[in-house]
Length: 237
Image (tube, rainbow, N blue to C red; front, side, top):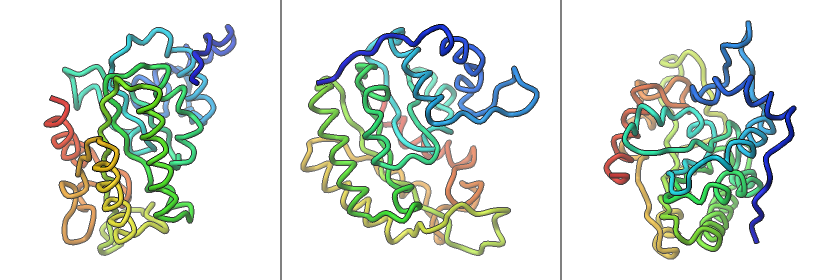
C-alpha cells in the first residue's frame, strides 16, 4: 500500500529553495552559488518529497536515469504538464526504490518510463533490467491504475570511431545488449497491455547512436533530444 508522506521540515525546505534553480533548469547547477552544485540522489528525492504535495494530479511523469534527467521537457513539450523524475546513474533497481516519490505521490495521468542502460553500464544483465522494468510496470498498474504507461525503448550508444567524440561514457554498454532489452520490452508491453515507444530507431545510424545526437556516446545532444521529442510528441498528443 502506498503512503503519502508529509512535507519535510524547514531545513529541507531551505535546501529546496537554494537548489530549486538547478532543478527547474533541468541541470545540476544552481546560479545561487559561485561554483556548480552537484545534486546527490538523496537531495533530489528529498526535494521531490517537498514539492510533490503541491503538484496537481494528472501530469505526465517522465521516470528514468540521466538521459531523462537531462531532457528539456519544458521546451520539448510546452503544451503538456510534465514532471521530470530522472536521476543520473540510476538503474532499474534504484527506480524501484523511489516509486513513492517518482510516481505514487504524483497521481500522474501518464508515466513515461525509460530505464535499463545503467544496468548494463554497472555490469548487470539484460534479464535483470527487463525483470525490474516489469516490476515497475506492475507496481504502477496496481497503485496508479488511472495512469497510461508509455514504455520507451532504451536508447542506442555510439559504437563508431572513438575519435569522433571528445569523450566517451559508453562503458560496458553494447547495442546488441540494448537491442535485447528492447526486444524484451516490446514483448513485455504487449503482455502488460501498455504502449511501447520505439525511440531507439529514430536515434540510430550505421554507428549506433548518431554522432550528431550525442555528446559522449551515451547522453544526448540538443539535436538528439529534439529527435527523441519528435517521436514522443506524436504519442503525447
